[in-house]
Image (cartoon, rainbow over all chains, first blue to last red; front, side, top):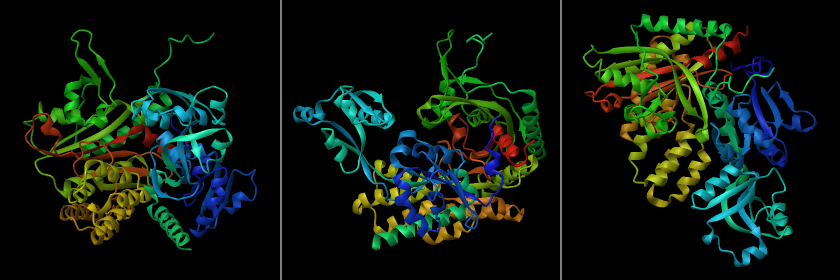
Length: 229
Length: 336
C-alpha cells in the first residue's frame, strides 16, 4: 500500500514545503528567493539542521542532496524545489519546471586528454568509452549521433578517469574550465547549458494554484529586477 | 529456511491482503453505487486482445507501454490491455452499436502497462471508470461527467480535492493559427506541458521573425493560465484565435453547469495542460487531493475513438479513478 509520511504532511495544510539542494546553489538562490518573499536564511544558520520552519510565512524548508530534490518533489514530499537542469534531464521525472532561475550556470561537455585531442576528430567516432555521472544524458547524446558508447558510471572526480586509463573521454559539467585544464583535459563537444530551475509538484500546483503562482510571479519579478540592477 | 527464488512475483504486481481489500471494496462499492444511480451499466472486457485490434484505438504513446507476447498457437501478437477505454470504444462500436444512445457504461478492472521513463517498470493499475457515448458532444455531457466524479469522491469520503479541467484543443488551435514547422511546434508544446515559461521564452526568441512579437507575448502567457475559474476570463483577454476562444466559451459553460450544482469550488482550470492519451479530442480533467502527490482520476473527451473501430461518428467522454490512489489519499486524511 502507498503510505505517505503523516508526521510531515498532515499537520498543517497551509504549510508549503520547499526542497533545497545542499551546496553552493543554496547561497546564490538565497537573495533571489528572499526578494520573492521566500526567505530560507533560517535553515542556513545551522548547517546540521535538515528541516526548518517559518510559521508566519507558512513555509517549511528541507535541505537535501541536489540529486534527490526532483524525487521529493515528484512524490509530493515537497511542493516546490530547486533543481539543476542536469539532474532533471538525467532522471526525467514528472514535474512542472516553471522558471529557469539563471543561477548555477555551467555547461555539460565531452572532454578528453589534450594530447589525444590533437590528432582526434569527433566526426570519426564510432565506438567510444566515456566516464560520467550522467549515464542517461550521455547515452542519449551519443545514440543520437549514431555512436556506440560504453558508459562507465562514476560518482565523482570524473576528470581523473582518463588520467588513470579507465577511459579516453568524459562527460561532465564545466564552469570555468579550470578543473579540466589542471587535469590536462580539453573540451571537444558541447552538450548543453545547465542552470537551476524552480520545480513544482503537479498536485500541489493543482490544489494550491494561487499560492504557487504567487511564488512563481514574485520570483520572476525578482529576476527581472536583478537583471536591470 | 529461505524462500526459494521461484515463489516470488514479477516487479509491478502484488497480492492484496484481506485488510486492504476491505478498504478497496468500500471505495469500489461507493463509486459503483453512484454510477448505477446515474444509469451506468457495468461491463467486463477481456484482459487480452490482439495487439492489432488494441492498437487501432491507441496512439503511439500508449502502444509503447503495452506488455506484448506471441500466441504460440497462432503466432499472432497478443497484448494485455494498458487502458480500458479503447476496449469500451471497441465494444460500443461493434457488439453494442445498435444499443440506444446515450450509452452509459462502467467498469472495475485492472490495466497493466509500463510506467515511467525508460519503460522498464511494469505496473498493474486497478481502475474504476465510466464512459458516456452520445450522438453529439456538448458542454452538458462534459459537465455531467465532472459532476459525477466530484460526487463520487465525496461519496468515498474525500473533502479536500480539486478537479482540474483543461482542453487539449486549446493550445492546438492557437498553434494551428501560426505558420511554424513541426520541430518548433513540438518544442513549444513540450515547454507548455512543463509550464516552463523560461524555456518557452527562449524557444520563441530563437524562432526568429516567423512568429510576431505579439503572438510570442500571448504564447508565453499560456503556462500561467492555471488556477481558479477566473483563469477563463483572463485567458479571454489574452487569446485572439477564434477556435481557442470557442474552447473557452465551452469551458465557461461547463463551469457554469457545475456551479449551478453548487460544486464550483471543487474546480480549477488549467489551459496549459494537454497531457493524457493521444485519443483525447476536447475537454480533459484530472482529480487531485490536497497533500497527495498523484492524480486520483483522469479522463476526457474522445470523439473519434469509436470511428477507429468502424463506428459511425460518435461523441464520447469518460474517466477512470485510480482505485489505489483513492485508498491511499483516504489513509492520509483519516489514518486507521
